[in-house]
Length: 481
Image 1 (cartoon, rainbow, N blue to C red):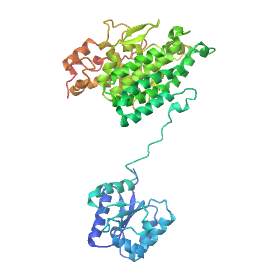
Image 2 (cartoon, one colour):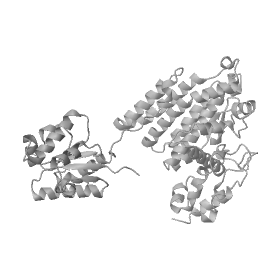
Image 3 (tube, rainbow, N blue to C red):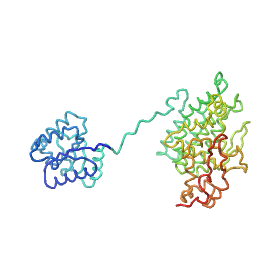
Image 4 (cartoon, helix red, strand yellow):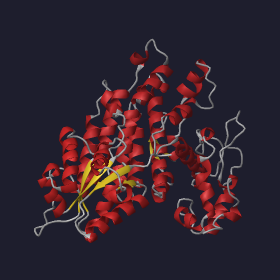
């Protein structure tokens, strides 16, 4: 149980009305969890008034001393007259000897004709709470209450980690960082430039990928999978720059899904620029991993922000990508979910790691909280699997024609969330276009016609990734508000 804060109220017996005002304040503070000590409640006949005042001011058990300032209190304090004068002698000694102490809070109860608060000389430089004006009383009272309970309106955020690109000594990211800085600046000053800067960032991103290219000289004397792992780790800076870029352009460009899809097309083709001269096909596995990760993270981001039209634009389109012989081929989005042989086959076997997918294991470990969590990544992965069935560009549903959700084994809760929401008619209305439907009846039919049962699984896994029908009965879709 939290400790109850304790305050002492110092004031002048100016008028009965003023005394009632002080008692009302004390009563309200008590009702809001503050233990208030005030002479009318605590000073009894026979007690030493001076000793009582001294104890209240110097007692370490008193968290705050509220000094109620009106004209009479100021005059008596400055002249050291009466009980107020006695308290002032004690309080001023504490204030002057402990200049950093926050124990003493002036409370303004009255101002002069010019609106200047009546403040005794010994606390004139202190920041005060102004309760003299009914118009701002509630706001100022909340400030006082927050101060007493140590719950300020503005709190210093926790210290996070420095961005990884600061420590990436061998790689330069000046161009992408410059593009992001300009995007941030122009979204407030000159939003029309955002579209142009989109292209600038894409070109800068591609150029910076060149720093991570692998060749036979880099691999010489090393295990190829070790080199790939090292580069995947280093590419985290590129991924994080992309995430920051994605957030800015999504907020400032309408229907940004088409532009993001073009970004992936351009980055994919550029990353394979020298593929036909490659000594080893595995030299591009770190680029394949990065593109896969960024595509998944894009879906996570759009899901979180209910940008379902943007997701539809990314999955229901034809991409023109460079193939094995460096010729351009028409592909679906599943091309961004490649088999990473250096990890899932070579490294997995060499180190006897026995992972369903080492690539998926690594990707999940790179979650970026709070948005890109393990469960949100799995949910996006499973969504893409279902969409590959719905928007498939071929009737062939065999291996290679759909997006296999390699991360599905890493979360039970997160992977079914979006399908369970289909019970809501409101949610169905939001997502119907993404599923290729115009109404709830069509969503039900699409769910039935694109049910992959329990076939979406690793060969040695008991669990499978769920289709829509694996989570909700078609008849229950849209059955609740």
